[in-house]
Image 1 (cartoon, rainbow, N blue to C red):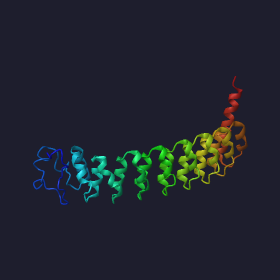
Image 2 (cartoon, one colour):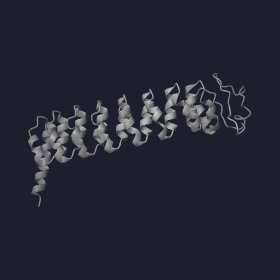
Image 3 (tube, rainbow, N blue to C red):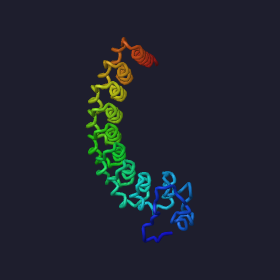
Image 4 (spheres, rainbow, N blue to C red):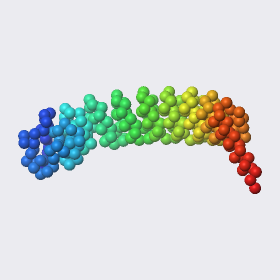
Length: 257
């Protein structure tokens, strides 16, 4: 095996691996630390590279400048942190995503402006909560959606007016019920349906006349009994049926001894 005081090198080659010609056949292979066709660092196979480095992480740092992007990306998982920091600027986005998964959460701010959406999503999933607001205006809605899923409730209302419906749907699912009235007038019925299903009963009355019948249906489920009577002749059969079912149930309870 290589001397522990030096970084080992496997003299990586682009051609298909040839164990007989491998410079390390009497060291790594000779002691059973690699397996031809299963755990091999010089094979252009992500599965084999990962299995090799899992057994021999001391070789990972020597792969960080390799020409093969997948070898670099896998090596990031096993190399020491101080060796992978320069790869925040790697040319390949998969490598940068691997870096975003390894760096301490407090050190992710540099990657929060990465040009690749998936890298920024990884950052959004790991960044400390107190720093999440820095990504609140990311140009990609999927990144903002991940921010909305993690942002503390006290700051979440700032995303209630996001330009994208999917982000606002997340906000509507997570905001405390008392804070939902600000989303009652959302332009998208899908958002208003979520709001109607979570509003406090007295606030749900404000959506009983919504133009979307599914919103009205959710509002009827939440609103107080005295308020839903006005929807007994709703033009939508499902809404009328729910109103009458709730009223009948209420009357039955009133008549019970």
